[in-house]
Image (cartoon, rainbow, N blue to C red):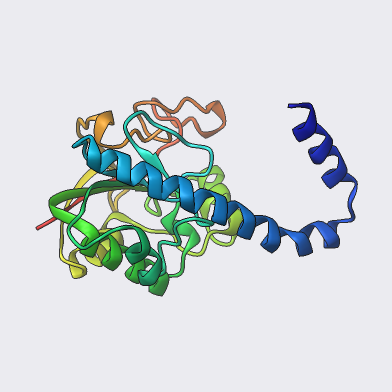
Length: 223
């Protein structure tokens, strides 16, 4: 722990341009280390006969019985990277919370096509993204591109159409419609626990009546 603290302090003392210049090297090293761990975890899941459930763009997120990955180990916009770890029709479930809005539309098309290819028939891709049909000013300031590096702002129609074009059957779980009416149905956290949802988020800054922070959440199932 002390060694990690010393490294963090030393890093913070470096000028910003140097830190940014070192970032690709740091991410490459992290990727090499994480690749071996991911290979081992996938192999262990298979040996134990467990469902293969993947979180993409996980950052620091972690959920029991799910394998967390991030871009430095699984680039979801790279078909070659997907194939490095997974065979076709091999994944039981994929979960993505507030990731796809950081990709361009073309990158999203590649990512969902890869997800479709590697999911088993009947496999589920649960997706949560900011909701473009929620139009209160405070929310939009936080989520509309280019805030926080966002490149896309989906609404339920756009996200559904993109997923259906890839071959998925889509079930919206939480969303605003075009008239800004909110809709929600029951969903199981074991299929992907969305923290930024009407059920679990309580950020007072985003409060709107009985709602707090909300996301556009869908289940996309491989037909």
